Every structure is written in C-alpha cells, then in structure tokens.
Amino acid sequence: MAMRLPSRREDEIAEDTASSAEFSVWAPEAGSVEVALGARRVRLDEGAYGWWHAEVDNAGAGDDYAFSIGGGDPLPDPRSHFQPHGVHGPSRLVDHDTFGWTDDIWRGAPLAGQIVYEMHVGTFSPEGTFDGAIDRLDHLLDLGVTAVEVMPVAEFPGSRGWGYDGVDLYAVHGAYGGPGGFKRFVDECHARGLCVVLDVVYNHLGPDGNYLGSYGPYFSDKYKTPWGDAVNFDDHGSSEVRDFMIGNALHWFENYHVDGLRLDAVHAILDLSAMHFLEELAVRVHALSARLGRTLFLIAESDLNDPRIVRPREAGGYGIDAQWSDDFHHALHALVTGERDGYYADFGTVSQLAQALQQAFVYDGTYSEFRGRHHGRRPEGLSGHRFLAYLQNHDQIGNRAAGDRSGHLIGTDLLKVGAALVLTSPFVPMLFQGEEWGASTPFQYFTDHQDPELGRAVSEGRQGEFSAFGWDPTQVPDPQDPATFRRSILDWSETSRAPHTDILEWHRSLIALRRALPDLTDGRLDLVECRFDDAAGWLLMQRGSVAVGCNFSRDEITIPLADGAAGDDDEWTILLASSSADLVGAVLTLPAESVAILHAVA
Image (tube, rainbow, N blue to C red; front, side, top):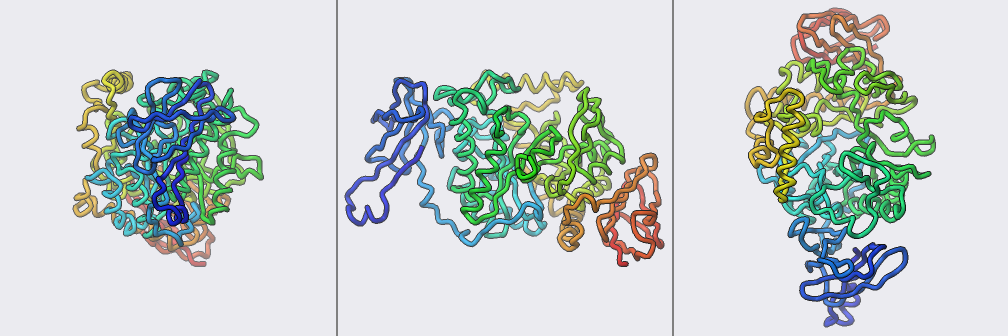
C-alpha cells in the first residue's frame, strides 16, 4: 500500500488542504474491495492485473485502516508497515520520510571484511527492545564487531518469539519498538560504524494471522513444505507474489537503511522458473545498490551445498553474495563435543574439519550416511568470503531441546579452540549473542501464540519431537511458558566476573589479531594449507605467514611446522595461545585441548 501526503509546496499554496492517502492492494479474485478507516468505508477501483486503488481524503500517517474483500470482515493490509494492535488488528499508515536520519554519509561496507554478531532483539537486553539494544552497542564496538545480524523483526503473534513465524512481512514488530525503534537502532549502528543485516523469511509464513491467502494466490499446492502449501514462486499468479517478496527486500534497504539481508532456508524456496527467485532478487538488490550508492549484500541459509547459490551470475550462479557454512559448523561442533546424533553422524574427524577450512563444503558430491545419498557439489573457484563461519548460531543452539550453548557442552579450553578457528578461518566469522563471554544463559525455543489451540499444539509438538530422541517430556521447556523466554535473556553481569571475563578477553584478542594481520582476512582458499593427524587429534592450518595449531586431544602433542606447512627458513613466534604452548625451532608443543596462533618471518 502506497501513501501520498501533500508536498511542502502544496502545504504552502493551500494550508487548509487536508491530507490524502493512496490505498492499493492486490486481490485478483475479489469482486469488490473497500478500505475501512474507522467508521468510514471507501470503495477501491479495479485496475490492471488484479490491483485495486483509491485515493482517500482526510487520511494520513497515524491512521488505522483495513481492507474488506467482497464485503467480508476487514483484514490487515498484506503490505502493512505497522500493526500496533497485533497480527489480527488494523494496519497503520506510516510516513517514512518524517524520520530524522543522521547517516547521510554512510555508504556501507563490503561483507568480506566483517565480523558479524547475530542478535535476537527480545533477549539481547533486559528491555527486549531496539532501544535496549542500542544501549549495548558500545560493547560490540569494544569487542571489535563490525556488523550486527538481527533475527527477524517482521510482525509475529504475541510479544515474544524467534520471529520465523512472521505474517506481516513489511511491518516491524511492535513489542520491539515498531518502525521508529528499528530506524533508531539502524541509525545508531551506522553512527558507530556498524553494518546492519536483517534476517528475513521468504520460504513460509506463520499460521496465526496469515491472511495472504484471502487476497490472492500467495500459496500453491504444487509443492508441499514442512509448513504446508509452498509460497507461490512459479505457479499461476506468481509474478505478483515474487514482486511482493522482492518489494519487501527493497523496503528494508530503502526505508530502514539496512546493509544486508540474511535469507532464511532458501532450500525451501521452491521455484522452477527460468530465472530463479534468488537470482531475480540479487539482480534487483544489486541494481538498488548502484542507485543508492551504498554497498548492499545478501546472505543465504542453505543446506544444499550448491555453489550456484553464491556463484556470480556471470559464471552461471544466482549471484547471492554469501551463505552460512553449516558444514564448517558441523565439522567443528562434532569434533569438539563428540556428538554424533542426527546430521552430526556425518561428521567428527579432524580431516573433515581440514576440508571445511579449505573449501567450506565437506560434502561436495560425496556420500552422506545421514541423507542416504550423495550430497553437494565441489565449490571450485569460490572465495572464502562467500561463506560465513561460526561455532554457534540461533538454530544450532535453539533447536536443541534445552537450548544448550557450546559452553554447556564443552569446557573453556575447547571453547577457546573453537573460537580461534572461527576467527582465523578464511571465511567471514560470525558470533551469536553472548558467545563472546561464554554466556551461561541458554537460548531456548519460545513462542507467545495467542490462539490457545495453536499454542497447545506447539508445546505438545516440541515435547513429542524430543521425546522421540529419548528426552523426558517433562524436561523439555514449554515454548509457551514465559519462563522459557526469560531464561534466554542474556545476563550482562557475567561480563564482569570469572570465567566469563577470560573468555571475553580471548575473543577481543582474536578479533584484534584478525584485523591486524592481512593474511587472516584473505579469502583465497587456494592459499589455505592444512595438515592434521586424525589419530593424534591435531590440526595445523597455515594462511600465508600465519599458522594456527590446534590440539583437540586430552594429551600433550607436538606439531612440526615444517614439511610443507612452512619454509624451513621461516622464523616462528607465538602471537596468541590459549595455554602454555612451547615453540622450539620449528616444533610446536601444545597442552591438551589448546590452540596457538603463530607468525612467521622469512
């Protein structure tokens, strides 16, 4: 829905002229459409391609409205920019031009050089709002973070949740602070030199408050997904649905000044069009970047191990700028925790971690026992900057029954090893909120569905899912219980007491080292050399003049630095070590479960 307000010149010429707003909605199968503004009902005129339009006097920013399709009950606008009364209430007109941005000179920054920090607004601060998050931004600056990735903020049911069941994709969640709150947050991030990445969901919508099907063919039974009918990207009427989603992406860039979007589970975007939705989205976003003169980027989440997603369009790819690297995570997690359940059954060796460090994908066309088939494709020629590396993220923590963090599963020693590999990897590193100090608070799955039946189904489904894996149902946190949400709120007092202070300083040092040594920000994967010993449990990664020695075992080990890992004439020095590493000539001795980062001078 587009809104037109009088220009300054109109105000000067006729100060008594009332404002007007233009209402538009796509409803191709409707016999009639009305916009309801309080007691007023105004009929929209039918236009081309299923669109309806009307310009209404005495309407403007701050007014609530809804659409009636064929004389039915008023429904929220599919393109609503604010839902102050929740997902079932009327929409509110927003004039984006009234916000006083201060980031006029901000031009963004390339994703390749970022240190990304994933954040959930509702649990990041005690306030659970954008303003509460603003108060903690200086902590991120002190840590060395350069980009904040915000989990979804599109309006979802209730006041608390992860945001992946959003239904009003253009509207900012009211409980977080609404449109104004998000703009303040982005503006303050830019003032501190921080990029902002927003997590968006285009593969499905939540069930509660999802009225899109009442307007038109937004969904298709051509494909089935875990959430029911698929979003209609390639069936009858899909052109307008694609425009709806692409328009949503451009909306966040233009009206909220975000720098990047993280696209949730793109493997669930089912599209057999000649130009895949992801490619079309990348074309439009990169065109907008050129027009705005700002660096804009897209990050995909995908479990396909398909390099076409991040390969440039000129080389036959979709042109998405980067993707999360789950293979790197799984290889590292399985190795340091010893877990082999579920998809971790495919991982757990040092050699697999070495392969992940050298090419991101462990499964590059090889056979996966977990999947029961060959999986993936070799990512030849791609830069490490096309992938994000992490030890933890919201999924890998929150999709565990109790929301266990890595710090709940392993000791501080291995936690430091994992952090070192993430932050010295050839990929774009990402941390999850609180990871930097080894937060003791879990990140559990929580919801606030207002529909009692849906809430009960979610709670019972969660218990049933983990009961099948041997969990006592009474020990599985109830997503609908407010206590589950409260347990997940970060405890910031931990940053000033042991052992958290030590872990925090370790992360600060690693980030400072990454930013100081050019070899650590070089994304050329052909320059990554790894040697390892699966039986002994050690790995040595060399990136130019930097070497990272890791001991995953519970025994002291020695690692030779020569024999292909470095020239015999190199003189090594230890820059940073998690424990009392010893270097004699070209032989590194590492205590159990430790890591050392070395620098060579020829």
